[in-house]
Length: 116
Image (cartoon, rainbow, N blue to C red):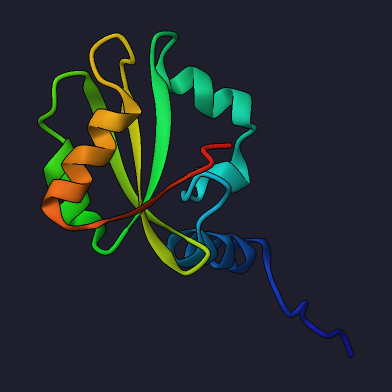
């Protein structure tokens, strides 16, 4: 009698996607489990920097940052059971301090995390 494997490839992928959604990879997204860091960095663009912020509410953080001059993208996610915003921005137009101040003004800022 043959036994079926406990996890098929599709089931394993589903578990990785779920883990990425709730626990996040190094940058708070499931892509960091699946793609090398260099690929993620290139996807952001050559003049784009990345900052990661722990926040009380990632929706409030996204709303506070998305329309700022120099911010190109704001992603919501989780890292270590904590809500985060990963922000891609042009450092020529906006600084991390500016981003932190916007999050503090909205009342959702906790801390700035390593962006790996």
